Image (cartoon, rainbow, N blue to C red; front, side):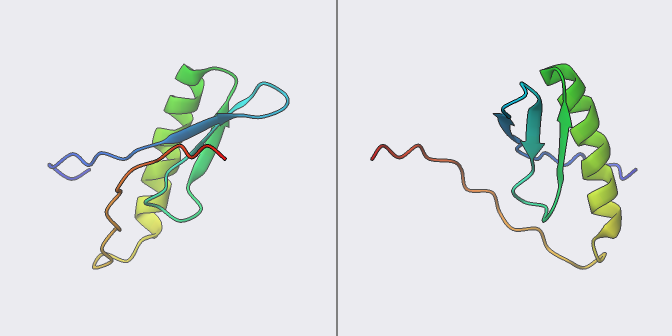
Length: 72
C-alpha cells in the first residue's frame, strides 16, 4: 500500500430487497453491496483496492465534482 491515502466518494442506494449497493463514480465498474452500511463499506474498500490494481500506473483518475438532487 502506498504511503499516501486516497479518498473516494461512494454513492449508496438501497435495492428492492433492502440490500445496500455502493458505487464509486471515479472508478469505472467499481461497486459492491452489503446487508448493512458497515458491511457495504468493508466490501467497497476491498472493491476499490481491486479496481486500483487494475488501473494502469499512469492513468489519472477523474476528479469527483459532486452529486446534485434534481426535482422534476
